[in-house]
Length: 146
Ligand SMILES: Cc1cc2nc3c(=O)[nH]c(=O)nc-3n(C[C@H](O)[C@H](O)[C@H](O)COP(=O)(O)O)c2cc1C
Image 1 (cartoon, rainbow, N blue to C red):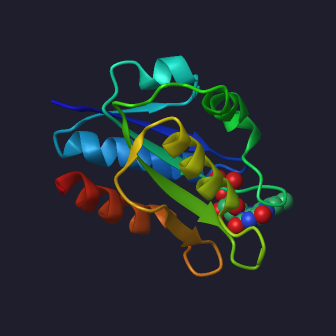
Image 2 (image 1 turned 90 degrees about the horizontal axis):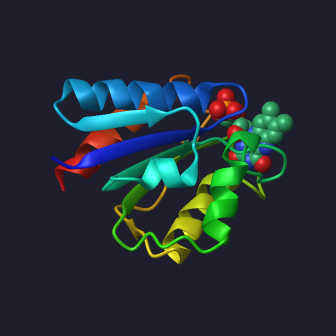
């Protein structure tokens, strides 16, 4: 069975909550799904077929600090040719110029490393959605049926 690893970029905890709920829900559905609180690139991709990245955006389109080492590893040219991935991007549409910027940056960096996107990033707007896990869970479950 394929291995699904899940990581979170978060400042206030919402993206991490979504990631943990995803791991639990996918495990309950019979997948091998693991949430990694410490998103060390080498560890996270070891034996992984599908990576789900849940990330909020901070600053002005910036990646949360807890994913900065992961992102640096991508920028250093990791070879992710055998990896599929999807990004759940949490943001706030009142940040007009940088809405969900971190999610889009991470998506592009993963693609640059040769990983295969399963879908375009899922944007979840904090202005409209109080419980992002309710949007993310069905989206990821549908993707994994493909
Ligand atoms: C200081 C600050 C800066 C933010 N900057 C952005 C931004 O540039 N773009 C965006 O889409 N959302 C931005 N947000 C909104 C967060 O990404 C959003 O509230 C998200 O749900 C927070 O998730 P978290 O709890 O995992 O950190 C910002 C929020 C704060 C508090």
